[in-house]
Image (tube, rainbow, N blue to C red; front, side, top):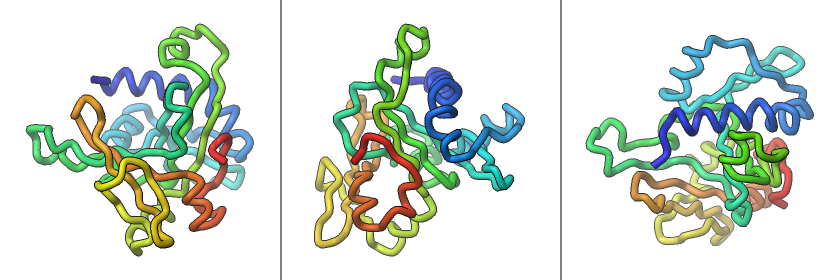
Amino acid sequence: MAYYSDDRNFTDIVHREVALPEIYQPLGMKEADVDKEYLRRIDMDDGIDYIMVDSFGKKYNVQERFREYKYHIYSDFTLRYRRDENPDKDRHESEFYKIKADYMVYGIINGSKFQMVNHEKDISFVKYAVIDLRILFEHIKNGDIVLDKTISRPMIINGKLHAAINNNHDGSSSFVAFDVKALLDLFGKNIIISQKGFF
């Protein structure tokens, strides 16, 4: 089972060394100067990893999720959904329910966590997508995106995106998978701010 500090360390390294130059700089964004303790709190409470600022001074709350190369075969991005096995009922609802970020930055690197953390190879993204979460959740609310426990991969059915709800192999939680290309096909370019390798 992954621990928060390990996940956060990996995210921070990929953020600094790969996401800032490969994703944020081309979008004209840089990291806002924010107190580290405040960032830790909004990560735990609101699903926000970083606050970015554009060239006009506008701030954006961002959730980041980075994956090892072994996940490059998948065409979706995921949000943690439920932790029903947790003895604390207040923790059953996960990221999907609490996230207040404006954007999800989802990236898959060309190596492993071990290689990244130990600087064993030059790491870059083989895939990444920047998704507007406000638009995503509006489509869920309107019924254009259906959360579906009966499928294992996201797919378009009768003009709607059915997002698959799957359990993690260790049984610790479930997650919702959204196909990146399907989001573009159904809802246009304003939901996918930027991407590489997904289509």
